[in-house]
Length: 391
Ligand SMILES: *Cc1c(COP(=O)(O)O)cnc(C)c1O
Image (cartoon, rainbow, N blue to C red; front, side):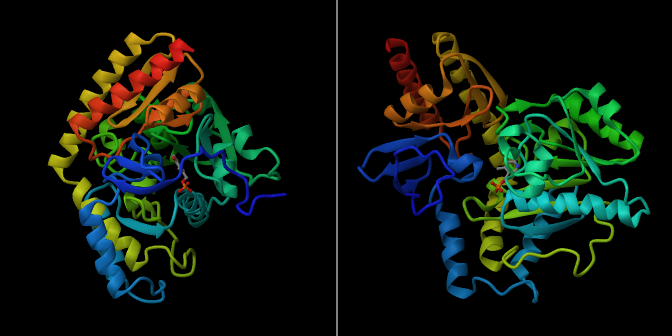
């Protein structure tokens, strides 16, 4: 008999009842160190006092009104995002995949307004992840996402990860945009080099294409800058944000330049919940905290510590780990053992990681993780590796 919850997930037999900062407390009382942060979502950890305060204050006033009216919290969050990024304008939604829906529509609308509706095609990269909607799976294109769900939304072409020559050859008269994650998350923490993002920007400029970045996983402080594109010294035309921006409240956003938002006039897009007072109040507190220079430099400092410890871990356990890759607090442990086995051994050692493609375990802790927690987490991963070696 089918379970009452549609069985689309592989769930670990863990049930958390409480969170405190970097810690998750299981129903049986065990305390797990959380290096997953709900897949890069809980950037301020669990039950952060400022977030709890904002959420409860707003909950006592007003949760939802719809976008039929002015929403001051939404306006405030949009202004903060514009002040802190390349963007001139922001649309709020509730998830990464909804952000993907809009970036695809926006690129198509742009070219329609420019008199080139045929330029509806977007070039993307193999191994990408852009969410589970029809546009999201078509944009990413991977067999694991799309199998059984055809016919797929047309208008996407895929090239091997970071193969810039393949990008150049893939550009046709019908190409309108290039879409890329500055660091592939689900694809196995595969970073771009700064030079590669720059080259993609140049390719877009030479061919008059829009550059769309998906920073749903790598954005909001995770790499030690508010947004990962800042490292490359480029700016996109359109960008997807979600996950970390709500700190655990469902919130997504599309950031765009005025130019790229051409034609997105009243009636062209909408979301009932998108940008509601509750979500945007929380988003404001997240952004006020994370966009602070001192906070971001702490992320970079702690990332250095974590990376150094993880390099040591890899060196000590060559039969379990092959290498560390990624940026900031978005790291991947490439495994030599099966990543699923190391994930399980981690659970046994009471440390949470997140699996990804390419036999990688993702390390995506709350950005508020302390030095002591970093050391404790690595010592738990060390214990997990030892049990794999003993098996
Ligand atoms: C998680 C993710 C998405 C989808 O976000 P949802 O909120 O799960 O819909 C899109 N792009 C990237 C890069 C992601 O990591």
